[in-house]
Image (cartoon, rainbow, N blue to C red; front, side):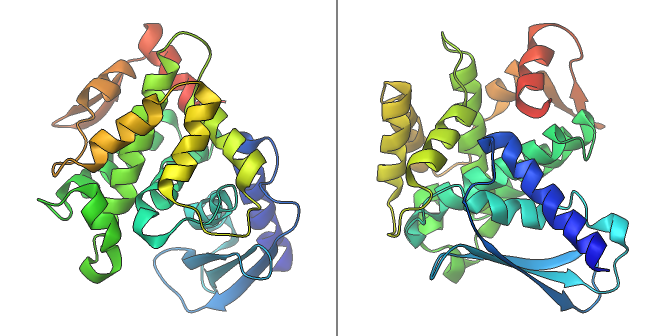
Length: 263
């Protein structure tokens, strides 16, 4: 159904525009490739820069149309277009920040409830914490494919993004990670070369007027243990219990959480 697939692509683009204010690049080639049946509507996605921005997605030919709108893969790939192409050793930043915003924006766009969204984010962070124990995030990122440390790297980077977002939102002034991501998209998304994480973090530091972002990232990258998120989640009123995730529904915590995943 071409109409259904077009709606899926358009909705994913609109979701990413909630962060950047627009689609990240002026033009992009989008390839939707039919694939066999599976447990998810989209089997795989890939973003490419050579010869211009392009995204390929393998879509299940057995999934119903209602399964596609709001699914995560195309949103994730479109978010990559808002960042410059990073070196493979720094995949913690490119995949991690995109993983964080994939979860945030799917909730911000209303594809799931606040509780469902935070349950999903907390579950992903938990998978990251259980992956590649004993390695620093920098080590896991450099050898991600060889070690299959995907959860450690994707969700370890997402954990840093969450820490930064909470830190920035609780400092004087109206700051957030959203602002840094928009600045990065505006200045550098169309850059034809590969970037290092240090260069990207330098863009953030210049935008925020301090080296706090670089310092926080350096500290987390050097830890063998997964990032400690207890204080950040508590600040957002997100509590992990034996029965699952509970959200504080009143006061400053709920208001701050709403800034991240609300509309």
